[in-house]
Amino acid sequence: MKLKLNRRQIVIGAVVLLVAVAALFASRSDQAEGPGVADDAATRACTDFAGGYGDAKNKTARLSLADRVMESSVETGNDAIRDRAAEMGRSANETDRVWKTSGDALINACEDAGWRQP
Image (cartoon, rainbow, N blue to C red; front, side, top):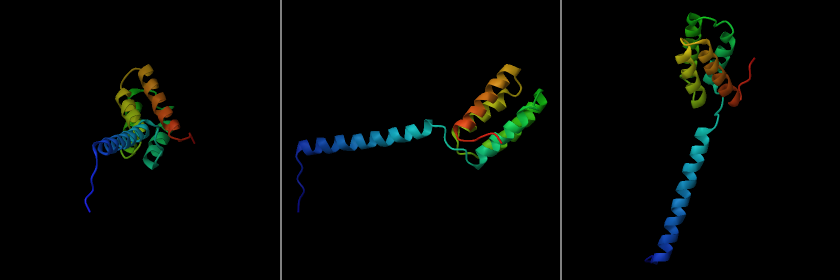
């Protein structure tokens, strides 16, 4: 049995295939942009940060806290929390305003992922 397709059928098949591929990429893109979930490593990083933030009043304490949070966040599958934790780590040696801004961004990423402060 020989399958014979005309030009119209081939064009329709190609369009359907392109739409399916575009839909697949669009759904993956939506997932990557979301807040993700607070897996164990993300929860540990968020809890460590929230627990130590109030005591991190100088650069040495900030750097120590950043090291602890970064150690946990490296293992998370949550890109937003990992990125905000890295940003917070970079800002630990900066001004109070920069530190607070990056800390707030990390807490927001944590809360967006479903983590709640204990």
